[in-house]
Amino acid sequence: MNILIDIGHPGHVHLFKNFANKMMGKGHAVLFTCRQKEFEVELLEKYKLPYVSFGKHKFTILGKAFGLVQFNCKLLIQSIKFKPDLFLSHGSMYAAQVAWLLRKPHISFEDTGNLEQIRLYLPFSKYVLTSDSFHKNLGKKQIKYSGYHELAYLHPNQFTPDESVLKIINCNKEDRIFILRLVSWNASHDKGQSGITKEMVHRIITILNNAGRIFISSEAELPEDLKKFKLILPPEKIHHVLYYANLLITEGATMASECAMLGTPAIYVNSITAGTLEDQEKYGLLFGFRNDNGVLEKLEELINTKDLKKLWQVRRDKMLKDKIDLTEFLIWFVENYPKSVSVMKENPEYQYTFR
Image (cartoon, rainbow, N blue to C red):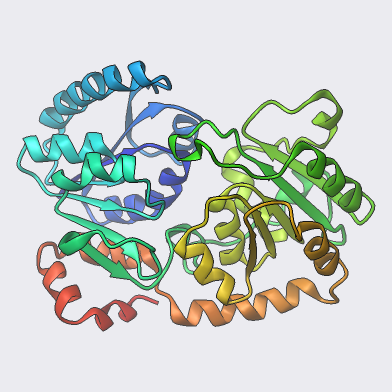
């Protein structure tokens, strides 16, 4: 089977990397396609995954309109050469539309609920895989699974923490490590939204700097007075640092969810929420705030909680008992497609085979 996977965000590389390697190990052919937006290409090269890049991502409205035509043409040409039997992506309008043109099935993942993107790919997709905690109804094409995207790469079956990462950031296991994650607010779904104010950033740093080692991961350039806290790390190592961290404060939903998978407490501050995060909050793995109100109080509470990480590992284990290994599920779903669709619709409990 030839499988084309279109990438729109670095997180999508993580989502599909284990699936791709295991499928190639079973004799299937896999090709990744992408646009250069952040560090997608760096991750694809680091993981030695076969890929084709179609150039730089467009950010302006006019550029995006032109890019839709340009990237669709490039993907169509590449697809004719590769001859995929099936297209996979996370909400890629390019993959969905080209798959439709070639009369091939496109299966999408979805967890953001960005209607702007959903409208552009859903009419052309065969099925959409979402968590059963996803907050939108996408109709007959939606197939729900018990889990989260992050379990595709952070489930204990798929991820082994590497303690050597601590040397890279000049820390040891005895250090209390705190991560502050700031986003750029350039994504289309970020318009009109907000997170941690500049004033609150400095107040958080003051508290955490007195309690341990603080590192800032930021999509945007940090101001001069905060650069000394910048987390300097190869992008493929971030999950290992999150595993050993004691606490994350983040504007980004993905990193909050990743910490929940790893058993690291997370405080999520963003006016945007999501069903998957709310589900993880029910397990006590993270705390969501729509604005700054209450953040400092929760921060103080957590850093003063005895055996915080041990408590979170217990909560994480409870969550894992209810969820599936998403990578193993996807391998089964794709290899047995379209029969797998009937199985999931008639007997959704079958998914719990993949734990």
